[in-house]
Picture (cartoon, one colour):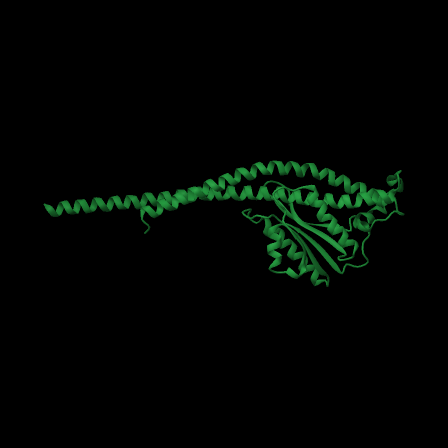
Length: 292
């Protein structure tokens, strides 16, 4: 049976941990508000950007852009995986890593090669132990997501796609749904409008008639890479918001568990203390009776 001093040390240790988890919860909650606002602001912009690109690409059949053209066959798949740099966020990183690994196994079973573009320390650590030979890019996400960061990644992906280093790219990340739900998503990234161009053929030709100046080719040359950059940027923002939400939830659960543990240890402390007092009283009474 542990003595009173050991129990007191454990209670003190758990109380210190509780202060840390409570502080981390408050910090994550503050960061979540800003990250959520950024995500909500980016979503409409990304949607309208893609719609504009799809409309121009569907209406101007003479204009082409390498990022919009699907390759004849998919021999190599580029998988862009986004995770966080830090842990202590529950199953946040594990669920997106499992989703990416399942996608890779599925495509390899279909005879496709896979190359990896990893954003986030957790993704880099996970795949460096399993698929180090397939890693093309490995970068940290950082504490603050910036648009130039997305531009740099999108530029590398666009250049690799044009050089036919891969024939298709899929973006795997955690989509921010609510504070309690972060859903792993696998989103087609390149070619940008391969699926939309098929649907465009059934639309009314007058609905996609635009007057474009100076010409559609130059407009597509601007819109295509910009759409790719915005897609990567939105995914980074979604992942960042989900990370803060998951960490806030995890720290809240840890704080609640520490409270339960403190109550259990306090009850154990009182029982041991009561047993010690009772034992001392018995010894005193026994000693007094022996002197009579």
